[in-house]
Image 1 (cartoon, rainbow, N blue to C red):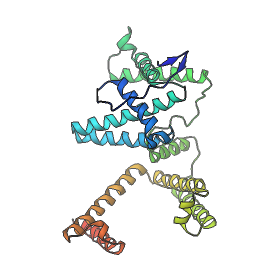
Image 2 (image 1 turned 45 degrees about the horizontal axis):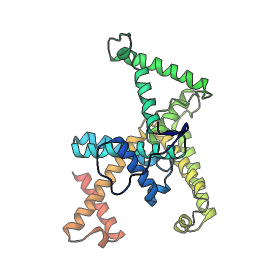
Image 3 (image 1 turned 135 degrees about the vertical axis):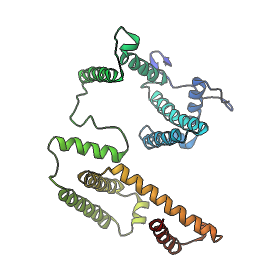
Image 4 (image 1 turned 90 degrees about the horizontal axis):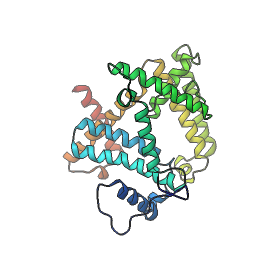
Length: 293
Protein backbone atom coordinates (compact mmCIF):
# COMPACT_ATOMS: atom_id res chain seq x y z
CA UNK A 1 0.00 0.00 0.00
CA UNK A 2 1.33 3.45 -0.93
CA UNK A 3 0.77 5.34 2.34
CA UNK A 4 1.99 8.38 4.20
CA UNK A 5 1.08 8.60 7.91
CA UNK A 6 -1.49 5.82 7.35
CA UNK A 7 -3.11 7.74 4.49
CA UNK A 8 -3.48 6.55 0.91
CA UNK A 9 -1.10 8.38 -1.42
CA UNK A 10 -1.59 8.30 -5.19
CA UNK A 11 1.38 7.15 -7.32
CA UNK A 12 3.96 9.77 -8.28
CA UNK A 13 3.59 10.85 -11.94
CA UNK A 14 6.26 9.63 -14.36
CA UNK A 15 8.78 12.29 -15.38
CA UNK A 16 10.00 13.01 -18.88
CA UNK A 17 9.12 10.55 -21.63
CA UNK A 18 8.46 7.14 -20.04
CA UNK A 19 9.51 3.85 -21.62
CA UNK A 20 7.48 0.66 -21.94
CA UNK A 21 9.19 -1.39 -19.23
CA UNK A 22 6.54 -4.03 -18.51
CA UNK A 23 6.61 -3.14 -14.80
CA UNK A 24 3.40 -2.47 -12.84
CA UNK A 25 4.90 0.41 -10.84
CA UNK A 26 5.94 2.15 -14.06
CA UNK A 27 2.42 1.68 -15.46
CA UNK A 28 0.92 3.25 -12.33
CA UNK A 29 3.33 6.19 -12.62
CA UNK A 30 2.39 6.60 -16.29
CA UNK A 31 -1.31 6.68 -15.40
CA UNK A 32 -0.62 9.26 -12.71
CA UNK A 33 1.16 11.40 -15.33
CA UNK A 34 -1.81 11.17 -17.68
CA UNK A 35 -4.14 12.26 -14.90
CA UNK A 36 -1.85 15.23 -14.31
CA UNK A 37 -1.21 16.38 -17.89
CA UNK A 38 -3.91 14.99 -20.23
CA UNK A 39 -7.09 17.14 -20.39
CA UNK A 40 -9.32 14.16 -21.23
CA UNK A 41 -7.91 11.92 -18.51
CA UNK A 42 -8.09 14.74 -15.95
CA UNK A 43 -11.82 15.27 -16.38
CA UNK A 44 -12.80 11.58 -16.03
CA UNK A 45 -14.55 10.19 -12.96
CA UNK A 46 -15.12 6.64 -11.76
CA UNK A 47 -18.69 6.91 -13.02
CA UNK A 48 -17.75 8.34 -16.43
CA UNK A 49 -15.46 5.35 -17.05
CA UNK A 50 -18.17 2.71 -16.53
CA UNK A 51 -19.18 2.51 -20.24
CA UNK A 52 -15.53 2.14 -21.27
CA UNK A 53 -14.96 -0.74 -18.84
CA UNK A 54 -17.98 -2.57 -20.26
CA UNK A 55 -16.90 -1.86 -23.85
CA UNK A 56 -13.37 -3.13 -23.23
CA UNK A 57 -14.66 -6.37 -21.70
CA UNK A 58 -16.73 -7.06 -24.81
CA UNK A 59 -13.81 -6.21 -27.10
CA UNK A 60 -11.61 -8.62 -25.16
CA UNK A 61 -14.18 -11.34 -25.75
CA UNK A 62 -14.13 -10.63 -29.49
CA UNK A 63 -10.31 -10.69 -29.52
CA UNK A 64 -10.20 -14.06 -27.76
CA UNK A 65 -12.66 -15.40 -30.33
CA UNK A 66 -10.40 -14.13 -33.12
CA UNK A 67 -7.40 -15.96 -31.53
CA UNK A 68 -5.03 -13.23 -32.74
CA UNK A 69 -2.22 -12.76 -30.21
CA UNK A 70 -1.64 -9.08 -30.99
CA UNK A 71 -5.34 -8.27 -30.69
CA UNK A 72 -5.64 -10.26 -27.46
CA UNK A 73 -2.61 -8.52 -25.92
CA UNK A 74 -4.02 -5.15 -26.91
CA UNK A 75 -7.47 -5.82 -25.49
CA UNK A 76 -6.10 -7.33 -22.26
CA UNK A 77 -4.08 -4.14 -21.91
CA UNK A 78 -7.21 -2.04 -22.42
CA UNK A 79 -9.01 -3.98 -19.67
CA UNK A 80 -5.98 -3.51 -17.40
CA UNK A 81 -6.05 0.21 -18.20
CA UNK A 82 -9.55 0.42 -16.75
CA UNK A 83 -8.35 -1.18 -13.50
CA UNK A 84 -5.31 1.11 -13.30
CA UNK A 85 -7.40 4.19 -14.14
CA UNK A 86 -9.97 3.46 -11.43
CA UNK A 87 -7.28 2.68 -8.86
CA UNK A 88 -5.52 5.97 -9.65
CA UNK A 89 -8.69 7.99 -9.06
CA UNK A 90 -9.62 6.15 -5.86
CA UNK A 91 -6.07 6.70 -4.61
CA UNK A 92 -6.42 10.41 -5.40
CA UNK A 93 -9.56 10.36 -3.24
CA UNK A 94 -7.59 8.73 -0.43
CA UNK A 95 -9.79 5.63 -0.40
CA UNK A 96 -7.56 2.76 -1.60
CA UNK A 97 -4.87 1.97 -4.17
CA UNK A 98 -3.75 -0.81 -6.52
CA UNK A 99 -2.01 -2.65 -3.69
CA UNK A 100 -5.30 -2.86 -1.79
CA UNK A 101 -7.10 -4.20 -4.85
CA UNK A 102 -4.44 -6.87 -5.42
CA UNK A 103 -4.49 -7.86 -1.75
CA UNK A 104 -8.29 -8.14 -1.77
CA UNK A 105 -8.12 -10.37 -4.85
CA UNK A 106 -5.42 -12.56 -3.34
CA UNK A 107 -7.41 -12.98 -0.14
CA UNK A 108 -10.53 -13.92 -2.11
CA UNK A 109 -8.73 -16.48 -4.27
CA UNK A 110 -7.13 -18.12 -1.24
CA UNK A 111 -10.40 -18.10 0.70
CA UNK A 112 -12.41 -19.60 -2.17
CA UNK A 113 -9.94 -22.42 -2.87
CA UNK A 114 -9.65 -24.35 0.39
CA UNK A 115 -9.25 -27.55 -1.66
CA UNK A 116 -6.00 -26.09 -3.01
CA UNK A 117 -4.54 -24.28 -0.02
CA UNK A 118 -6.04 -26.26 2.86
CA UNK A 119 -6.78 -29.88 3.71
CA UNK A 120 -10.16 -30.04 1.95
CA UNK A 121 -10.55 -32.61 -0.83
CA UNK A 122 -13.01 -31.97 -3.64
CA UNK A 123 -13.33 -34.66 -6.30
CA UNK A 124 -14.50 -32.75 -9.36
CA UNK A 125 -15.49 -29.36 -10.74
CA UNK A 126 -19.10 -29.86 -9.59
CA UNK A 127 -17.95 -30.21 -5.99
CA UNK A 128 -15.67 -27.19 -6.44
CA UNK A 129 -18.60 -25.10 -7.70
CA UNK A 130 -20.80 -26.20 -4.78
CA UNK A 131 -18.09 -25.29 -2.27
CA UNK A 132 -17.51 -21.98 -4.07
CA UNK A 133 -21.21 -21.13 -3.64
CA UNK A 134 -21.04 -22.01 0.06
CA UNK A 135 -18.09 -19.68 0.55
CA UNK A 136 -19.84 -16.90 -1.37
CA UNK A 137 -22.85 -17.33 0.96
CA UNK A 138 -20.54 -16.94 3.94
CA UNK A 139 -19.08 -13.80 2.36
CA UNK A 140 -22.61 -12.42 1.92
CA UNK A 141 -23.29 -13.00 5.60
CA UNK A 142 -20.18 -10.97 6.36
CA UNK A 143 -21.47 -8.19 4.07
CA UNK A 144 -24.79 -8.18 5.91
CA UNK A 145 -22.92 -7.90 9.19
CA UNK A 146 -21.30 -4.74 7.74
CA UNK A 147 -24.75 -3.26 7.09
CA UNK A 148 -25.10 -4.42 3.47
CA UNK A 149 -28.36 -6.42 3.50
CA UNK A 150 -29.10 -8.67 0.55
CA UNK A 151 -32.31 -7.91 -1.34
CA UNK A 152 -34.27 -10.29 -3.49
CA UNK A 153 -33.09 -8.77 -6.78
CA UNK A 154 -29.42 -8.59 -5.79
CA UNK A 155 -28.79 -11.83 -7.69
CA UNK A 156 -29.29 -10.09 -11.03
CA UNK A 157 -26.51 -11.20 -13.36
CA UNK A 158 -23.88 -8.68 -14.33
CA UNK A 159 -23.79 -7.86 -18.03
CA UNK A 160 -25.02 -5.35 -20.55
CA UNK A 161 -28.01 -3.15 -19.72
CA UNK A 162 -30.28 -5.36 -21.85
CA UNK A 163 -29.07 -8.53 -20.14
CA UNK A 164 -29.56 -7.03 -16.68
CA UNK A 165 -33.00 -5.67 -17.59
CA UNK A 166 -34.21 -9.06 -18.80
CA UNK A 167 -32.78 -10.89 -15.80
CA UNK A 168 -34.19 -8.48 -13.21
CA UNK A 169 -37.61 -8.78 -14.85
CA UNK A 170 -37.30 -12.57 -14.76
CA UNK A 171 -36.43 -12.50 -11.06
CA UNK A 172 -39.33 -10.14 -10.28
CA UNK A 173 -41.67 -12.39 -12.27
CA UNK A 174 -40.75 -15.36 -10.05
CA UNK A 175 -41.94 -13.27 -7.10
CA UNK A 176 -45.30 -12.58 -8.77
CA UNK A 177 -44.53 -9.07 -10.07
CA UNK A 178 -45.48 -9.52 -13.73
CA UNK A 179 -48.26 -9.40 -16.30
CA UNK A 180 -50.06 -12.60 -17.21
CA UNK A 181 -49.48 -12.21 -20.93
CA UNK A 182 -47.62 -10.18 -23.50
CA UNK A 183 -50.52 -7.73 -23.98
CA UNK A 184 -49.73 -6.05 -20.66
CA UNK A 185 -46.11 -5.62 -21.71
CA UNK A 186 -47.20 -4.07 -25.02
CA UNK A 187 -49.56 -1.68 -23.21
CA UNK A 188 -46.71 -0.60 -20.92
CA UNK A 189 -44.43 -0.07 -23.94
CA UNK A 190 -47.06 2.13 -25.62
CA UNK A 191 -47.44 4.10 -22.38
CA UNK A 192 -43.71 4.70 -22.05
CA UNK A 193 -43.30 5.73 -25.69
CA UNK A 194 -46.15 8.23 -25.27
CA UNK A 195 -44.43 9.66 -22.18
CA UNK A 196 -41.15 10.02 -24.06
CA UNK A 197 -42.89 11.83 -26.92
CA UNK A 198 -44.68 14.09 -24.46
CA UNK A 199 -41.41 14.97 -22.78
CA UNK A 200 -39.95 16.06 -26.11
CA UNK A 201 -43.05 17.94 -27.24
CA UNK A 202 -43.48 19.77 -23.94
CA UNK A 203 -39.88 20.86 -23.61
CA UNK A 204 -38.75 21.59 -27.18
CA UNK A 205 -40.02 21.80 -30.75
CA UNK A 206 -36.60 21.00 -32.15
CA UNK A 207 -34.85 17.89 -30.85
CA UNK A 208 -31.47 19.02 -32.17
CA UNK A 209 -31.82 22.38 -30.45
CA UNK A 210 -33.04 20.62 -27.31
CA UNK A 211 -30.00 18.34 -27.20
CA UNK A 212 -27.71 21.30 -27.71
CA UNK A 213 -29.25 23.21 -24.81
CA UNK A 214 -28.94 20.19 -22.47
CA UNK A 215 -32.04 21.47 -20.66
CA UNK A 216 -33.73 18.68 -18.68
CA UNK A 217 -31.82 16.10 -20.69
CA UNK A 218 -31.92 13.77 -17.68
CA UNK A 219 -35.73 13.66 -17.92
CA UNK A 220 -35.53 12.50 -21.53
CA UNK A 221 -32.87 9.95 -20.62
CA UNK A 222 -35.14 8.51 -17.93
CA UNK A 223 -38.11 8.27 -20.29
CA UNK A 224 -35.94 6.66 -22.97
CA UNK A 225 -34.70 4.17 -20.38
CA UNK A 226 -38.28 3.35 -19.45
CA UNK A 227 -39.03 2.64 -23.13
CA UNK A 228 -36.03 0.34 -23.46
CA UNK A 229 -36.96 -1.49 -20.25
CA UNK A 230 -40.54 -1.93 -21.44
CA UNK A 231 -39.38 -3.28 -24.80
CA UNK A 232 -37.16 -5.81 -23.02
CA UNK A 233 -40.29 -6.90 -21.13
CA UNK A 234 -41.98 -7.58 -24.46
CA UNK A 235 -39.03 -9.72 -25.55
CA UNK A 236 -39.13 -11.67 -22.30
CA UNK A 237 -42.86 -12.33 -22.57
CA UNK A 238 -42.26 -13.61 -26.12
CA UNK A 239 -39.51 -15.94 -24.78
CA UNK A 240 -36.90 -14.05 -26.81
CA UNK A 241 -33.46 -12.90 -25.69
CA UNK A 242 -33.34 -9.10 -25.94
CA UNK A 243 -29.54 -9.08 -26.10
CA UNK A 244 -29.42 -11.64 -28.91
CA UNK A 245 -32.17 -9.87 -30.83
CA UNK A 246 -30.35 -6.54 -30.58
CA UNK A 247 -27.02 -8.06 -31.62
CA UNK A 248 -28.73 -9.63 -34.64
CA UNK A 249 -30.01 -6.18 -35.57
CA UNK A 250 -26.55 -4.62 -35.09
CA UNK A 251 -24.92 -7.21 -37.34
CA UNK A 252 -27.68 -6.75 -39.93
CA UNK A 253 -27.22 -2.98 -39.88
CA UNK A 254 -23.44 -3.29 -40.29
CA UNK A 255 -23.90 -5.73 -43.17
CA UNK A 256 -26.35 -3.47 -45.01
CA UNK A 257 -24.25 -0.39 -44.43
CA UNK A 258 -21.25 -2.31 -45.70
CA UNK A 259 -23.24 -3.08 -48.86
CA UNK A 260 -23.90 0.66 -49.32
CA UNK A 261 -20.20 1.42 -48.93
CA UNK A 262 -19.21 -1.29 -51.41
CA UNK A 263 -21.71 -0.14 -54.03
CA UNK A 264 -20.60 3.47 -53.72
CA UNK A 265 -16.96 2.42 -53.97
CA UNK A 266 -17.76 0.46 -57.14
CA UNK A 267 -19.19 3.68 -58.55
CA UNK A 268 -16.05 5.58 -57.58
CA UNK A 269 -17.75 7.42 -54.72
CA UNK A 270 -17.21 7.73 -50.98
CA UNK A 271 -19.88 7.71 -48.30
CA UNK A 272 -19.12 11.38 -47.70
CA UNK A 273 -19.90 12.12 -51.38
CA UNK A 274 -23.36 10.56 -51.17
CA UNK A 275 -26.61 11.83 -49.67
CA UNK A 276 -29.41 10.28 -47.65
CA UNK A 277 -31.60 9.61 -50.70
CA UNK A 278 -28.89 7.66 -52.51
CA UNK A 279 -27.91 5.76 -49.39
CA UNK A 280 -31.54 4.93 -48.60
CA UNK A 281 -32.01 3.53 -52.10
CA UNK A 282 -28.92 1.37 -51.65
CA UNK A 283 -30.22 0.30 -48.23
CA UNK A 284 -33.36 -1.04 -49.88
CA UNK A 285 -31.17 -2.75 -52.48
CA UNK A 286 -29.22 -4.38 -49.65
CA UNK A 287 -32.48 -5.72 -48.20
CA UNK A 288 -33.40 -7.21 -51.58
CA UNK A 289 -29.93 -8.74 -51.85
CA UNK A 290 -30.39 -10.37 -48.44
CA UNK A 291 -33.69 -11.92 -49.51
CA UNK A 292 -32.21 -13.26 -52.74
CA UNK A 293 -29.07 -14.76 -51.21
